[in-house]
Image (cartoon, rainbow, N blue to C red; front, top):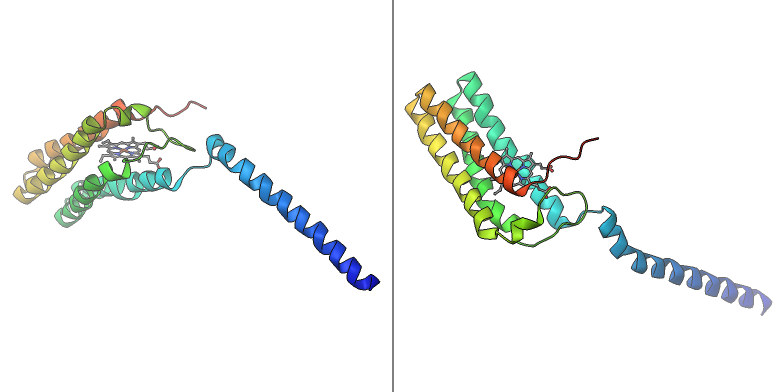
Length: 163
Ligand code: HEC
């Protein structure tokens, strides 16, 4: 009987400890979010910017340097697709964790979405220019794309913190 009793005691001590850990996690999670753990929403929109928007633009630029139309067109395609996903990626106001998004995005969401739309339109125009083979036209079309990145970042993205 004594043996059984010991096991029971250990068991209850363990359950109490687990309960405490559980309680700690429950209490702690909201403050964790405020302190810097980013949500899935924030991670996803940053990923879209980096792996699709910037990557598409990167191929467009590299293609232009190399005189590689296929690469320019691939980049433009990627960017048209990515630009169309920007409005949804920013649907929910979420400023958790490391984010440079400004709260004003959600006060002026239609303006924000409008710039995303212009980005897509300018990427399509770039593809048209590529097909003409005219370098000057391609160059100015690329500038127009870049100005949409810059316009949105200037209005809606916080500057990088200086270290
Ligand atoms: C409609 C608005 C808008 C347009 C257009 C736009 N961006 Fe962004 N971009 C943002 C916002 C807002 C952020 C900040 C996201 C965050 O930190 O929550 C951002 C962040 C980024 C980041 C950083 C991502 C990270 O990992 O933190 C890169 C790189 C980027 N943009 C590249 C581009 C390029 C290149 C273009 C044009 C081809 C572009 N963006 C067009 C709004 C835009």
